[in-house]
Image (cartoon, rainbow, N blue to C red; front, side, top):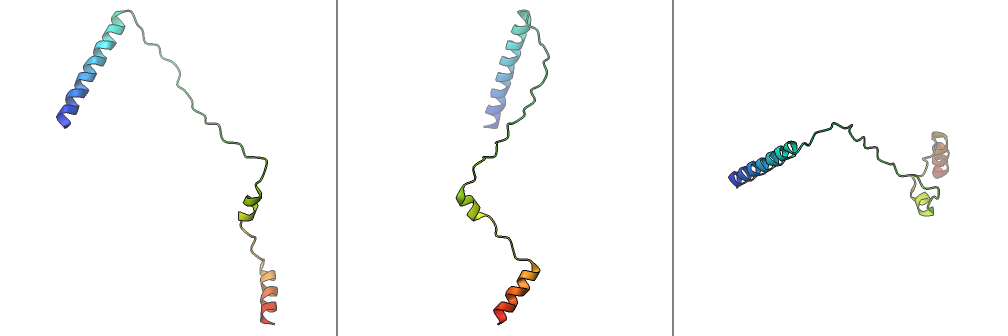
Amino acid sequence: MIDNQILASAERQAQLDAAKAAFFNSGGQITQVSGFAFKPVLPTRPDKIDSGTILKRRRISPAMAERKILQRLAEE
C-alpha cells in the first residue's frame, strides 16, 4: 500500500513538473502578489432579549448581611 502511494505521488510530481515546464516554455511568468489577510466578521449581538433567556440567568447571591438576617429568621 505504501509503495503504491509513493509511486502515485512520484507520477503526480512528474506530471506537475511537466506542466510547469510547459508553462514556462510557452512564455509564462510568475508574479508575486501580496497575501490574503482573513478577517472574520464577528456576529452582532441581537437587540431583542428573549424572555426565556432572562429566566436562565444566575440569581444574585445574598450579601453577608442578608444571610445573617435570613439565618435569624430561620432560627425563630
